[in-house]
Image (tube, rainbow, N blue to C red; front, top):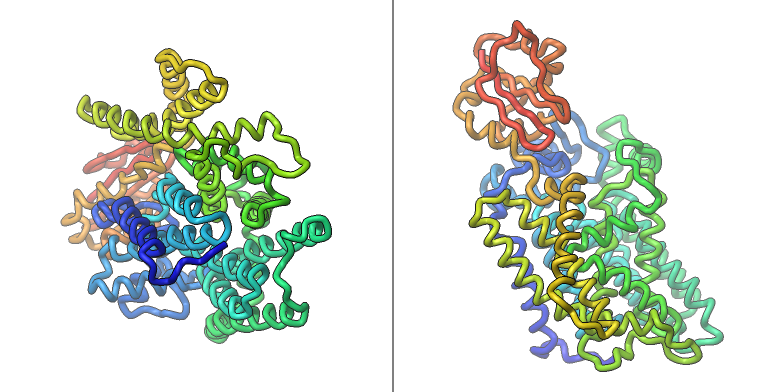
Length: 558
């Protein structure tokens, strides 16, 4: 593959375009929204404690040491607070994830150019930048986007070392691997190593019959030396913090790592079926959910003859197996699968303008099956239909907003209906059938049904979030700040401490006598999830009560 000059406008124009798109999608309203996610509040409160003169070696969350995760994300957010001159700015904290998300999109383009070509790489980057899961987590001060960035950088460097034979790439792999470890622990190293090993095993299996897919002509001694240097550099980044923590606390490096791995393998609080990510990944890709499985199939057909498709499939497949083997399964873990899935989807869509879509059809002795021909036809029709229907969905959402419908409803319908309409349209076009208005009506009816299903299973919360506690605290800010003590009942102590900037006292639920501890001058913020608040008959009435979804919050003043 030819490489364009480094300073060529054709090289930098897509990068500027991707950065501008990420800015338009991620920056609006970054500082004006609220937060009540425990994952984000852990980062915010630990970072605020550091930025305000707290301990930078041993993070503290709600007054307790928090050593479950390494502190690099806390450090980055604390530095962002210092740069902004305030520790109250959500925008400053979330800017860390926005920068990492933008860098991840640019990296996807750069990596895609090396693997599948410039056009497919650009489309893959746009797929990633417009995926609903990426847009959601790219605006939160959490560890998932930075972890995905450093994992992808490590995998890119391993590709350069193993396939291109660049010895310096081993050093960069160690650097990025160590940074990923410091973001979220040992899990950040497992996926790059698994992706590289699976690629080596698959490639060596076909080396004799397909010489064009061989690895770089590098001696085993150089590979061993490169791996050793990468491990040494990564250890130099990781070891100092663990040693300092071990010297100041009772925790040891081995105990911290083993505790984290044990939690991932045995945690029962986020259990899911073995196929959890098989449906979570496409759904989190939003409007691209129907293109992802077709793209994976098309790449599978070219696995033996296309180096880029093989690397991406090994990356996606090995990461999928690792995540599926963990006992703890959560939606945001699927972000680690987004880059290879987006690039494969971009490769599929890049064939949309090719009359025969040769890039997706098997070559050599492999027959052109009906499924292969379907993939090629799917690529030709999916993108243009999607762009047309996105405009219709946006218009429908605007009309629904004017009519005063719940603001989540148009978004849910757009997210669910667009891919379904696209799929039905593509299927009909692939069969050379006439697309009638009735087909769109049937697709929309099915979309409404699936919209209700997604609403019940948390898509509404992912789009809007839980703002009951922040809104209640903001409405009574003056009363709360004047209180002698702030008591909290329920699992919302973290958002209360973030918005009040005061330590809170955790008390039992209302039914267990929380109001008995409410003394003159105190404020009690009680919240319960799923079950409504049930105070005793002798308890005073709340000053205000709010409910959002399955969360009910009340404030009591004595």
